[in-house]
Amino acid sequence: MTMLPKATAGARKLGLVIDLDTCVGCHACAVSCKEWNSGGQAGPLPDYDKQGPQPDGVWFNRVHSYEVAEEGCSRTVNLPRSCLHCEDALCVTVCPTGASYKRAEDGIVLIDPEICIGCKLCSWACPYGAREFDEEAGVMRKCTLCVDRIYDTDLPEAEREPACVAACPTRARHFGDLADPQSKVSRLVAARGGKNLLEELGYRPTNKYLPSRTAVIPTQPRQTSDDAGGGVGSALLKLLDRALSR
Amino acid sequence: MKPAGSILLLTTLTGFAYGLLAWIGVYACLGLLSAATRLAIVGVVLGLALASIGLAASVMHLGRKERAWRAFSQWRSSWLSREGVGAVLTYPVAILFAVALRMDGDGILAAMLGAMLAFASLATVFCTAMIYASLKPIRQWHNSHTAPDYLICAVFSGALLFALLRTALSGTPGPTAVIATMAAAVALLAKQAYWRHIDAQTPLAALAAAIGLPQGTPVQPLDAPHFTENYVLREMGFAIGRRHSAKLRRIAMSVGFAAPTGLGLLASLSIAPLAATAVALVCAGAGLLTERWLFFAEATHVSALYYGRRI
Image (cartoon, rainbow over all chains, first blue to last red; front, side):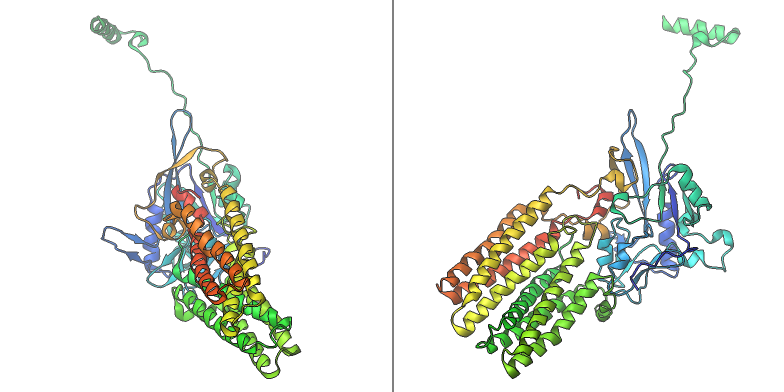
């Protein structure tokens, strides 16, 4: 069923909030995602030419690094890019089979690999390049928001979060309900001015990105021997400085 | 966007096929087929055969060909699904039309079914065009030229095929050559207008917007996520051959549109009409395939922006 679900009161909008200020671009989220989804319910994720000269494969998460030019020194912004579970998900409505769908209860966009015919149209419809084709299974693949983890009651409650969130060493990734204004993620978005990627294309992504902050820490000028203070030690240093300056 | 052979074949062949079926339907509707039942029936068979080859080619594009039947279910939201439904519905309409024509000539039944056939054929072409026109991340497709251009190309290529059939079966092209000549000229102008339009477009977004930075922030890629091309870059970041686009446009323009216009004019003047329409058809086929290749190769996708590619 590829019509987008009607907005219902109380429906959750599960998604990620990614802090570009603290993301260090270590790729741990991408690697952990690949690992989890190679073995989990969505797996296996194929790799081609694994040990060869042209390694390639399906990943749900790709970490880019950009250089933002600023006065003086440039700044690095790392951008983990994955499915944003858009509210106006064109990848869902273009699907001819109903394999690509958005869940009414939590807004997660999924692909049913048993129905997908591999026409690739959904990947053309996604401006974020979030869908990758599985050449081995002949079907499209994408981030599932670890739907097989977040609802797994066999896991301790603290672990019921996407693998990428669990793996992040700087806690730059946050998972939660963006429909609830009181949730931790919604409060973060409000406090930090969370942004949509490619806002002007109008896909209304659920995932938000917290802009990196320009940190300036004022520092005092370094002390020189002239103002190093009194005492025998500093007198000797002054003498030495004068002798060497000659 | 990567031009896939199967899709080029699909859109070009169904253009010829549904264009031909549409013209036969219109002719029947106007009562112009009274003495040419054989022409119409041969045309219907040829049209359905060409459409079938095109549709079979499109199935070859699928990752799971055995599931192709599932594509008919989502016609409420998906243009691809609607295209499939339209293509399948055209078969019974065309067959019923041919039977009606055979049974009672160009009576009211054949006229009605002819109108339905023309509508179903053009509607299918329209659905094909809308698959591309509805894709917001591709500025060269998501515009007001795409749908009319597909319809114009189908009407043009179908008119040419109809003119050749008519000349081959009855010796003279009659009005079909004049119609084909005019359609070729209209297609030529439409294609030029399309190229002017996409050349004047600006990119849909800048890299700053793609990564959530304020407009105008100077930003450039530093490290890519991976060293080799992945699916996204192969499919959506296709840039091979874009540097030849000016030359290929001239080839498509002269072979695909200008030559058929000139040859159609010869046929209209009854100068070697059979040879003229036959050569025109071959030219149009080659030119339209080139034009369709360019439609894909020149199209850029917003997602390539993340890799620092020009869109």
